Length: 217
Image 1 (cartoon, one colour):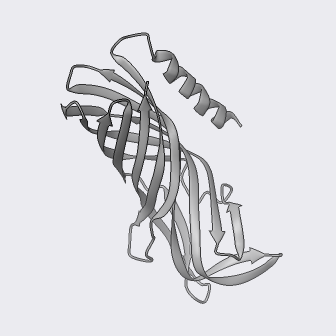
Image 2 (cartoon, one colour):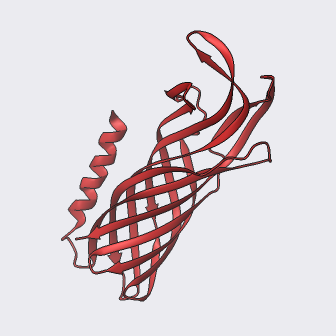
């Protein structure tokens, strides 16, 4: 309960910055995430999974062409893959499941960047991101619906990496796309073969593309 309260408190804090200085502006934004992971070795083929994000942005205009934007948002990311065989427990029985397995996480993201605007309508930004995992869950096709894996700690609590963002400004409306490149191992997956035998733990880094729109006040 504390982490969602913290998220909305940060949004309120960002809002309060508006009006303190003419160089500051505020925006709300939302959109879709296309996320996956990059395994450390080619053990399986993770696919892009669609999620969403919603949050706020505050931007300090240093000059006409340079600015310092900071995003604070909630994002849903994850991935899926087609398993040749995975151990699952259903109705207190252990079975081998073959098919699509979806993983998803809920995250609190903080993204400070530096932005260059070659013209007023175009912005190019880059910087780090820091994500705190709020929730995680897995789904085995139509066999087992979304089930929390937080106690299993499939995902690390913190994810860190680099981002690049291209935005187009049409009056108060901003359209943007950004790419996230994870630098730390934030997934630890127990792999099994088609006979249910363990193949070991696989570490992987996050990758994501975010496509969204915002409204600047």
